Structure formats: C-alpha cells, structure tokens
Image (cartoon, rainbow, N blue to C red; front, side):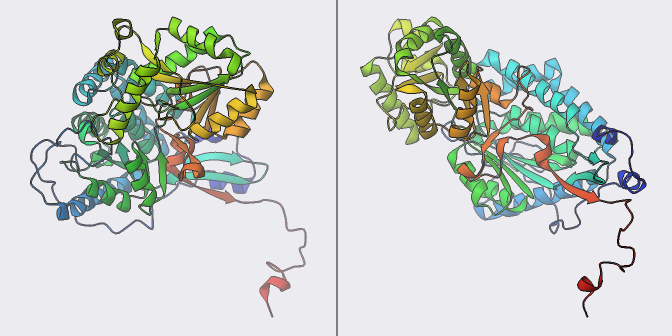
Length: 525
C-alpha cells in the first residue's frame, strides 16, 4: 500500500529517518521442502452433505485427482506449501506501492462483470446451493466492499505514524495463509481472501470443500492470470491437490503460518487444534433482538432480507428474532406480509425431522430454495410460493430455536427487553448479532449483554459483514473470539493478515546528562 497513507508530514528528524525503512520478509520462515509437480487425475467427488473444507486442487489450481494414497496427502500438502512459501518470500520484497497497484489490478480482474457472472454460474452449478440470481450480486457486492476497504486500509510498509510520540508502525507479511473454503461461499471467500492476503504481501493456499473444487479452481486461475500479467509470482495464490481429503487439509493447517478456518464445525475444530495461529469462524447465523419500539413492519422487512439473502446461505443471515411477548403476533403477521409462511405445529415437527436428518448426514438443506424446503416438508401450495418459512419454537432447547443456513427464521417472545436479551445470548453466536430499537441505551445494553464481534442496529443481520450503510470494513468471515476458541473477534479485515512492528525514537535530549547510558543502577557493579 502507499506509505503516504499512514499520516501527515514528517515530525522529528529521527522519525523521518524511520519512515523510510522498509519491512523485510520472514527471517524465521519454516524450512522449505522440495517442491514437486502435483499428480493429475479425476475430479473430486461431490459431497453436498459435507461442507468441511477438505483440500482440492494442486499447487497451481488444477482440479484433478488421482489414486494417491492417504499416506501421500500430507507430503502433497507440504509440496504445495513449499511452493507457496517461495512465492511469499518473493512477494515480501515488493515495494508497498507496487503491491498496491498489484491488488488493484487483481481486484479489477475479479470484479469484471463477465468474470463475476462466470464465477456465479460455476458456484450455482457445482454446489446447487444458494439463489442462482443472487450469487452474481453477492459476489459483486462483496468484491466492491473489499476493494473499497483496501483503498482505506494500508497493510504493507508504514501504516501509522505518531509524530508526538515518535513512533512509526510498519506492517509486514505473516507468510503463508492456509484457508478453508466452505460449500456455501465458494467464490467470495477465495476471491476476497486472495485480495486481502496479497495486500499484506502474503501467499495463500485454499482447501476447498469437496463440492467447491471446480469453482475454487476458477477463482484461483483468474487471480493467477492477473498475477502473471502484473509480473507477480503466480504461486502466491494456489489450492491443494485434488481429490479432496481431510488429512490434506489438516496438513495444510499444520504447515501454514496462519489459518483461516471457516465453515462446518469439523473444519473450525481442525483449525483450532492444528497448533497454528488461527482465525476460526463459524456459520451459525445471527439472532436479532427487537424491543417493540420499532414498528413490526420495519423489523420484518430487515429480518426477511437477512433470512432470504442467497437462500439463507450467509454467515450473518437472520436465523432467529427474539421480541417482547406482546409484539410476537404482529411480527409474525408482518413477516407473512414480507412473503413468509408461518408453520403450524405439524409442519414444525416435519422441519425438526428434516434438520435431524441433516445432522445425521442424510440430507443437507443449507442453501436450498424455499420451494425445495416446501416440497421436502410436504407443505401446502401456498407455502410453495413463499420466500421463507417462519417457525415459533417450543423453547431454547428446540431444534428450531435458530435456523441458520436455510431461508427460514425462528420467532421467540420473552417478557421484557432484558428477557429477550437473555434468550438471544443463550441461542445466539458470538460472531455477530442485531438489535432493533429506537433507544440508544438499549443498543449499548445489547452490545454488553450479547458481546458479539459485530452488532448491527436496525439493519439486516447480513450487514454485519460490511455495508455501505454502516462503518464496518468488508469481512468475508466473522469470528466470535475467545467465546468460540478463535483468535478472530469480529470481521476478518486486511490488517488481520499482516504483522506489525512499532518502532520508537525520540529527539528529546537526555535530561540527566551526567548519567552514562542507562545509569549505574542498571549497569550493575
């Protein structure tokens, strides 16, 4: 990034000299193993019921597989990481201004309208998840937000100056980032993470879910072509060799310098136990709280947007809303007016059964259309035209207490705002939350009681990932911090992929001029 973004004019002479210093690459890089070509072979099997980000692709991005045994997978991951580390060492020596230009070039290539359309079609065709028409909008919106964030967030070279204190902060790369790509986000995560990693002069290796191999390959190839055109090392963005295999993803996590583990519980757990610094992120949706001061129609509109966006396949989609008891009926009626279908008791039982089958691996409703859900639940014709389902759970332990990943929302009623907050804290996820209120003090209470990484006020839950309407930087994934065993709290922003060194200098004369150096006390006898 451009060094001049860090602050104003130079201050003390010592600080001015420090401003010219350039960050270096990693001196403590892990040993580089000999890189070899990745084997070719057949496509990885599609596994829609498994969103674990189990590896796919090669050190470049060929989505082929082979008869390679499980014992060979860690070595294949090692070769991929070794090649990536060589590219990272090359990129670490780049001038921040040149990296800025490189990221702009890659961003323009990814955001090209035809490219976005091609990536959206690939994702819809391969995964069968999400709204086909919405995917292009989702990708374009995410890329626009990420590029806007990068324009305002220096991540290489001098990123901050404090002339009064005589400090300069310099950002350098972490090395190789290993990132999982879940089935619900096969384009946004690799595209945005590529931009963020490159901006911090890192290399990144992706481990896609079995059902996202081809789509991730298309994203990686698009980025690599842009890197080649810019004269940058193409190995800076790559993916693991196909076929998809969990041991290979585990091997990537163990060998990378930083892990981004987004997706299923198994993927997040693998990132947390790998021993590598990790930015783990779940996908449990958002629980919203409404205190009754905002009209039900306004709350319903926002919740409906969050619950239906990309058929609910969004890490911050509205999965449940808790309101004060007197407002439950009016909120359900307003949700019906927004295109929702309120399930009766028998229909709720069938939804519980469907979700139970998903837990057992029999079927996976995540990212499927409301029409598909209606057919699976044998709902009446009126439900076949609904945009989403509405369920009133029996309690906090009900399987329907929150409905992430599908076009549906659970509605709870509790006595008073404090009671609503207590329930939301129990069923919600720490990565993000939403509150609908006209009272600022209640928004602050929600922030304190729910303690989410990001809290949106009077907005759809999906706005937590960053929107033009709020001040959040664009984040492809959200983390709940220590509450969910992650080093990521809030959104994954570009600065999280850089490591900084703050250098202090002073031009103030030593006031105790009679002392020599640190003084007799510290110099010892």
